[in-house]
Amino acid sequence: MDFADTQKEAAFREEARTWLKNSVPAAKELAGLDPIRQAKLWQKRKYDAGWACITWPKEFGGRGASAIEQVIWNQEESQYELPGGVFSIGQGMAAPTLMTWATEAAKARFIPKLASGEEIWCQLFSEPAGGSDLAALRTRAVKDGDDWVINGQKIWTSGAHYSDFGILVVRTDPTVPKHKGLTYFYLDMKSPGVEIKPIRQISGEAHFNEVYFTDVRIPDSQRLGAIGQGWQVSLTTLMNERASIGAGGSAVGFDSVFKLAQKVNIDDRPAIENGAVRAKLADWYCQEAGLKYTAYRTLSALSRGAIPGPENSIGKLVGAPKTQDMASFAIDLLEQAGAIRDQSLSGELALYQNAYMSIPGLRIAGGTDEIMANIIAERVLGLPQDVRVDKGIPFNEVPTGSSK
Ligand SMILES: Cc1cc2nc3c(=O)[nH]c(=O)nc-3n(C[C@H](O)[C@H](O)[C@H](O)COP(=O)(O)OP(=O)(O)OC[C@H]3O[C@@H](n4cnc5c(N)ncnc54)[C@H](O)[C@@H]3O)c2cc1C
Image 1 (cartoon, rainbow, N blue to C red):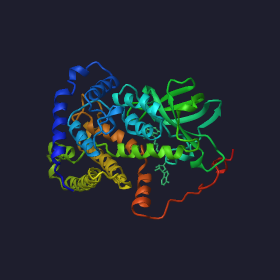
Image 2 (image 1 turned 45 degrees about the vertical axis):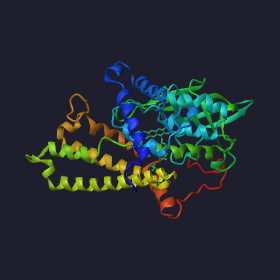
Image 3 (image 1 turned 120 degrees about the vertical axis):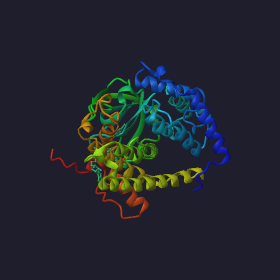
Image 4 (image 1 turned 180 degrees about the vertical axis):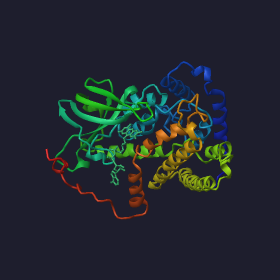
């Protein structure tokens, strides 16, 4: 690929850079606001100036920009420490699904408020019995007049506790094979019968939740796609989920661990002089170079207007374990101080401790390591398919493994 910007791309980069320089909120503007209000403030500012969700059509609050301009914008925006994160499911997954499957009236009602950050959405997909095998989910929807009545449970729902709306996939017909009996809806998270229970994580925080539905009524007008077409609609969401998760970077990388190894000692000598440390660093350097050039392939595809394929799974499959490995190594290098997670007491602002606690989740969310490896095996390398014993069997005839 050609690594230099074209003239048009360079002009776009300059415009983005100038706007960011003049518009990024100062620390005192954000002080005293909770993280959600901080994120909303920054999102609204971008929206008002035409820099929110820039590849979306202008009528939905976007800028009508190209995918490569999005990449340039991301590169420039990532130069600053900015509030965010709470919109990633709504903008990265719900919006593309609404754009593909919703009525014009629903698009006009919901998508601009996703772009402006006024409304936050969550993703109600995973269940205790349906994670990697999402199509095995059991939450039921039964038609009653113009409504559907929902009963069941979702789990690991990130941000359900502060979301206004959710995208939901449920079983409407258990008598057909699992992928054929699903239907997709969106719902107001304040609907009667929705109960949200936080799940405490290893880090002490509670970003995700269990969500219970007891006779929750959803109007049929909030269905996306046909009855029984929920799997196809879900694929629109999942394709966009992998793309948005795969794009995430981490502050823990070769550069940060290299600098740390220069600062700390092993046996009274700088760690960087230790052969075992150098060997580790060399491995990570090679992995990062491989990931960088793989990502450039994606950029090349985007700049030609092509859609990147399943090979994108490599970024998450290699990148997340590498970051976990580096964080663990850095904690060891810090010796006793590595055990301290209090930012005010730990030398590196708890960068490695926080990464070490959060990366295991990244290795699961949006497709576990094993599922990513299956995708690469089947869809990139063309190896034989994983065994699927329930293929073609009506869902209510699939053995559950329980004798009850
Ligand atoms: C931080 C985080 C945020 C999340 N946010 C959301 C959210 O907002 N909304 C939502 O709906 N879900 C969310 N999830 C749930 C996530 O999508 C699921 O955890 C994930 O799909 C895995 O499903 P599971 O947990 O049921 O594990 P399982 O599917 O039960 O997997 C258990 C183990 O078996 C392995 N395995 C399963 N199938 C295969 C196979 N065919 N071949 C080889 N190995 C296999 C898995 O790799 C894993 O190691 C989140 C998860 C995390 C960690």
